[in-house]
Amino acid sequence: MRYFTKQQQGQKEAVPVDLESLGQDRYRLTVNGKTYQVDALSVEQGTLSLLVDGQSYNVEFEENGDEIGTLVRGQVNRTDVADERKLRMRAAAGSFSVEGRQLILAPMPGKVVKVLVKVGEEVKEGQGLVVVEAMKMENELKSPKAGKVTEVFAKEGTAVENNAKLVVVE
Image 1: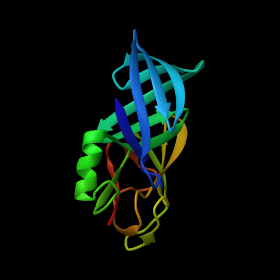
Image 2 (image 1 turned 90 degrees about the vertical axis):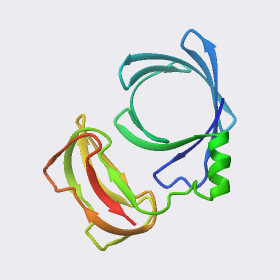
Image 3 (image 1 turned 90 degrees about the horizontal axis):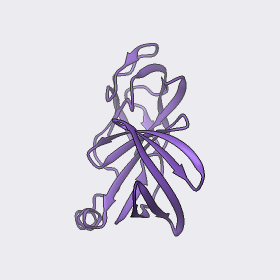
Image 4 (image 1 turned 30 degrees about the vertical axis):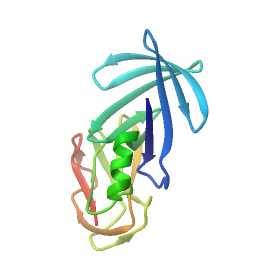
């Protein structure tokens, strides 16, 4: 199956990703023409143990519509994922790029360490908005688009739940 992925942190073009099941929790994954052998084991709800070309990774993930949030080796990523059909529909509608009001949510429970923006501030795509500490790692959440900060819910030093509203960029 072919998918197209685009990281929400400044990636301009969607990347083709081919995923082929080889049976028994084994897959062939091809990203931008480079192929990987992957063994995947579901450890618990929202967590996978992956063996990718001999390297071991624990991946925590959550799905929010077409967006998938992942935590791999302390790094949080948000990735938009579309199959070929969905990508064609988006192209016809002209909506694969991030547009409109964007609500930045906490990727997992944690503590707001630093708020980097204020209401009314103009931000660039990929600019840091909030730093959240989760699982003893600090994660800078970045703006998915250029725009203006219209709301800031995050307060330094406060605890946040998974999917808590942090910042709105329009």
